[in-house]
Each structure stands twice: as C-alpha cells, then as structure tokens.
Amino acid sequence: MRHNGIILAIDGPTASGKSTTAREVAKRLSYIHINTGAMYRAFALYASEWGVTSPDDPLVGELSEKAYIDFDEGGNILLEGRDVSKDIQAPAIAQLASELATLPIVREKMVAMQQEIGKNGGVVLDGRDIGTVVFPDAELKIFLIANAKTRAERRRAELASNGTNLPLEELTREIEERDRRDAEREHSPLKKASDAVELDTSKLTFEQQVEKVVNLAKKVTG
Image 1 (cartoon, rainbow, N blue to C red):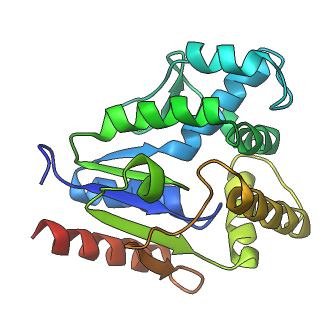
Image 2 (cartoon, rainbow, N blue to C red):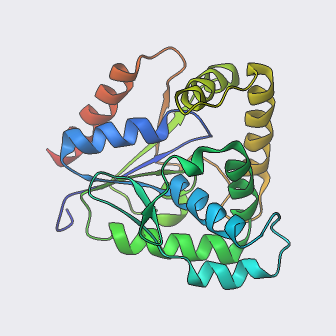
C-alpha cells in the first residue's frame, strides 16, 4: 500500500454520478477527493476568459502552461486561487471543456497535475481515464454507468440547484453526444479498464452506490 493509502479510481460517462459518489466515498474513507472533470472545466473557464471559444484557438497551448488549478481543503476547485465551483457548471463551459479535453497538450498537463497530487495514495479520483491513463496501477478501479435518461435527469437537477433550467430532451441529446465524443476521441478515450468493477447506478439510490464503493475499498485495504 502507498504512504497515505490506496488510489481509488472512479471512471464513467458524464452525469453517471462519479463526482458526488467520489466526494462522499472520500469523506467516509478520510481520503482526498480529486475531481478531474472539474479541473478540465476550470481550464475551460480560464481559456474562455482569455477569449477562447474553440479548441482550434492557438492560445490554448500557451494557456495550458499558465493555468494554475488546485483544490481547497473542502474539495472546491480553485482557479488562480479563486473558488470557481459554481462558475464551471455553466453548460457552455462544460461543452468547451469537452472539446478542449480532446487536445493532447491539455490532457498531458492535466494528467501530470493529477498524478502529482495523487501519487502517495489516500485519494479518490473521478474522471474518464483515471484507471486507464492517469493511474493504471490504482489499487481499486470502479466504472460507473447509467442510462442516458437517468443521467440527463441528474444533470437537470444539478443545474436547477444552481438556477439554470434546461429541457430534459436537450440535456439527453447533449449527454449522448458527449458519450460519443468521449468514446471516439483519439487520446485517452473513455473506456472501462480491464480490471475495473462495473457498477450500474441507474436504479441505485445515492446511499446505495456510495456503500457499494466504500465496501469494495475496505476489502482492498483490509
């Protein structure tokens, strides 16, 4: 086992419950939660503040070297030292993040940051390529799935809590398009690691899925 405990990797498609599950699991294990998706969205926010609207902008490479992204003790995402947890939930930022995440230069920068933060263990990371690219040697890998409609309903509720209301049909289309783009991208595509435990959360309550992951982690740690 590593110095601070195991590395627990939670991967899966958008809105499958990765971040909320990982946050609670980390809390119960007294581990650090690293929301890698939030890191990509924070970079997208940073890029948008510099006027970037597409991955073709030549500024992207330079900005990926300049951006400073971190987490505070409460797990909130920090961009240049400021809490941007709510700002990165905007649909336009999520869309831009998905597009920028296809660029090798962006992924390499984010992966390096994630590996540095988590190398000593005692962390729960959630994303799309944690168990396959970031930490292929993670002691426990979970792959969360759920049907597109369930995920769209979850995403709609999340946005509504931040004051944004979007039609369920629109969100379902966006999620299906995001799934396709994530699975087909050339670099670090979304896929289940061969040694990952698949967990379908479509019919599970939040408490049930958290308990399942915590129990799996305890089996590994003994």
